[in-house]
Length: 186
Length: 186
Image: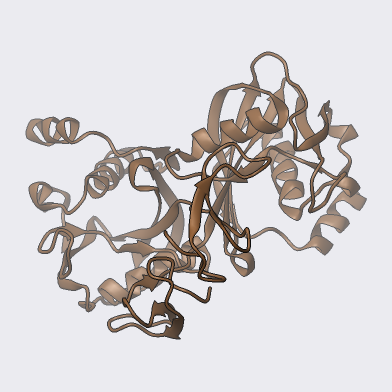
């Protein structure tokens, strides 16, 4: 961020009066340009005992499996964003939608908010997907999942499903070595 | 948003290739400037049967009561943001912190994430507060709360407390008329 989006003058990094951290401030019009975390919303789609995964047609992690998710847009709710992404990536609609799993990824300034919902009708292959499939738990391609967070959501879901209780949790993604150990064991 | 923050050239509003909604795109360097919802994090601080409220020393709603909350910063988790705001506004530390209540306010492109936690030690008056106090349920100044969302969090909390269960919920703020009716009745 180098120039003011309001007046095109150069920005300088400084701590504004009454603030306690450096911001980009316009040298001409004094506008403060805050930078804040972005929200990614998504949905774990279930179909009975199966879950829906999409194989990514885009970078990063092209060819790896993920669950429908993407950046929340202005003017929508978190749930609307999650359902929009589910439609865009898998042409799927869901019902019985519930908030499920939140993550913080502070080193990339992102917050993830996952819902879960039951597939209502069919599904297809959106433009950002190479392939969309329903998987039984024993067939999940654990070593081909796109992101650590996908592993976490699926791991939590299969664990929660045993007790049929799905508490809403928030955490950072668990470290990769923990996941690899876990799924080698299972 | 009028000028590119990377190169200072004028922006135009257009739908980028592969996208489906208008964005601000630089006419010179083609950088796409996305705009996304911002996250507000806060904490409902309890002290036994009492809750902590802060009387705002800043606009908007100067002089009205609120719970500690503010914009999440880059590089922090939602919980860290909530505890930082609690410290900044009420010089309070909390323990037994749990995720509690999420809100969507799509018309102002905001997401709220409230935790709840028990006061650990004392509290004070931060620079953004005129006054900080603990309130019993019967003393809550319902007609002097700063924002509809504060009314919702408190209403949910006192209701949940009756059953000692605090499920994590997400909704828009309930409409003002519903609140006014509710608290006239009670």
